[in-house]
Image (cartoon, rainbow, N blue to C red):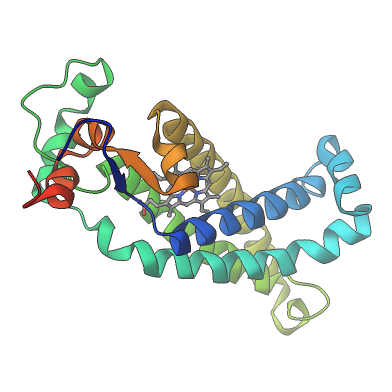
Length: 210
Ligand code: HEM
């Protein structure tokens, strides 16, 4: 066993369906939100049937995103604990980026960058949900003092910006780690890929099989 072309299961069908559902929801929320964030993006409202429909659908899509994201978090939680090996790996990050990484600690299923992104989204998506509720006209906003609504509008916009930048970084990193997107589509990665990027996880997956 363990020729480098052996396939290892990285993501279950449930995680993959959940992840791509979150991607679709996030895309709809981001595009409809941008449409009424600035006139330069207003053309995006055509995707939703015009300005009023973009405005009506945005918060409902936001609730769907929040719930689907919580489910994904529950499924990924245990894989995102930061370990001593992660901290050491972080210290050697520059060397890894310059492809000079050697004598590195054996990181597990995800690297520290992924774990930080997980934490960032863990704060950003619930914040978007909470501030979104506060500013949701005509349902909830009238229940809050105007000062709170104004603060929530500002926070919502800033947090949305951070979340979008984080997702752009996430997509770039996924693309950069050739084979990762295939893993999230088909569920499997090659043993060679696992050994190279996540040696601790590779060992765990092949324990007793070598
Ligand atoms: C086109 C957009 C996206 C692409 C191509 C993409 C790609 C990927 C890939 C390839 C992985 C697996 C990485 C690995 O196996 O090491 C992954 C994991 C993950 N993605 Fe995405 N993703 C996208 C959008 C999103 C969005 C919008 C969210 C959430 C708002 C998200 C949240 C996650 C989470 C939580 C994980 C698990 C990583 C962890 O738990 O640390 N992704 N993504």
